[in-house]
Length: 254
Image (cartoon, rainbow, N blue to C red; front, side, top):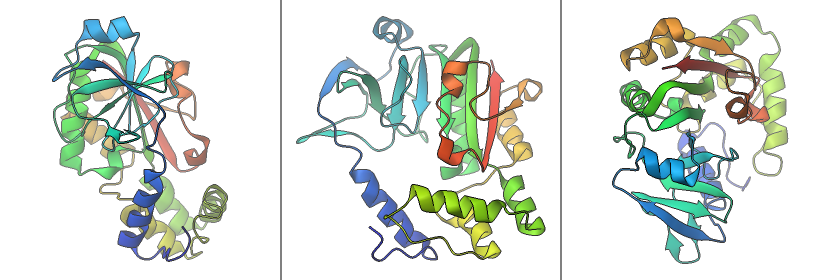
C-alpha cells in the first residue's frame, strides 16, 4: 500500500486507509440472530449481550456487541442495517451510523465503549450520539470514551518534549510495510492530528466535558482514567496499546 502514500495529502491517505479497511471486513460466517428496527433489552439479555463497543468490526469483549458504519461481508452476502449478527460463531455485530438515532431501547445495556471514534464526526453529531448513548445506558451503567488528547499535542509542539519522535516511531512500527515514516517536522505532527484519518473535531478534557454536559451527562461524574484502568476492568481492557501514548481516557456513570 505504500506506493502513492503521501502523508501531506489527507484525501489520499484517507482513501488508502479505506482501501486497507476493506481487507478487514471479510468473515467466514454471518448469522442473523435478531432484527430491528429497534433491539430490545430482553433480546440483548437473551443473547448474553451486556454492552456495546462502537467502531469495532469484531469486539474482543465476550459479552459485547460490535458496531461500525462499515459492514461485514461473507462471500456475496453483506450485513444490513437493523439486523444483529453472530460473526464466525464468536462475536456479535450490527451495522449502524452514530449520526442517526441508535437502534436500541432505553436503558438496555450496562456499558458503552468507544475508542478513537468521537473525533471522526462534528461536535454537533458527537453531542447527538452521546445523548443517545446516555439514553441506552441503564442506571449505574458506564461510558468509557477515548480520543487523541489535544493538550498533549499542543504542549509537545511548544515544548519539544520528545513525544512526537516517540509517536512517529510507534506509528512506523505499526504501519511497517504499509506507509513510509511520518515527516519529522513539528508542524506536520500537529496538523496530522486535525487533517488525517478523517478527523473532524479534536478534544482536550475541557472540550470533551463540554460535549458530555451538553449531551445530558453530569460533568461532576466525569473521571479521567489511565490506559486499561477504570471502573470496569473488562471494558478497560479493550484499550489498544498502539494508541495509549496520545490518548485521553474518560469514564462517566449514569
